[in-house]
Length: 116
Image (cartoon, rainbow, N blue to C red; front, side):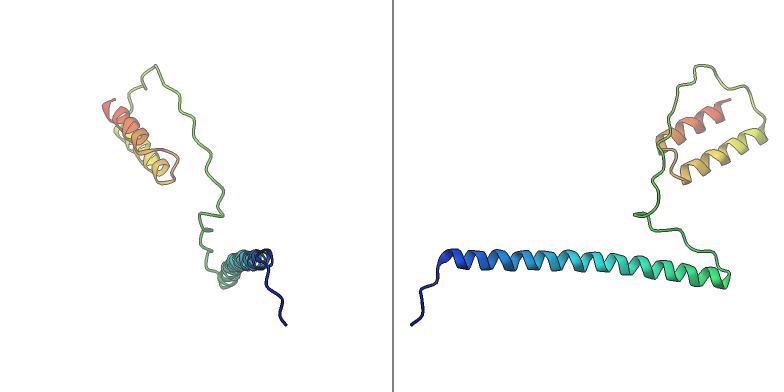
């Protein structure tokens, strides 16, 4: 004769299966990330061996940029020549491209440079 199954045994079995499934999912995810990172590293080594510069690391592994502190300048900038203005605008554009300035900060500084 078979014994009647207890509900607690069923619940324990289900919990055990869920724990195993969760562990397998985490392990699979970690394995995939490690594999992608290794492939990128090997590709960079192959490129450096061939003399080709390596691409920048993905954003998730790059070091975050430090936030730039801005201070209000109460004194106006001295008048600058056209070549100085051009150099300032070029540098300002590079800061915007690098993500060190917001668009609003860029526009504010550009207006200040052009108004002088």
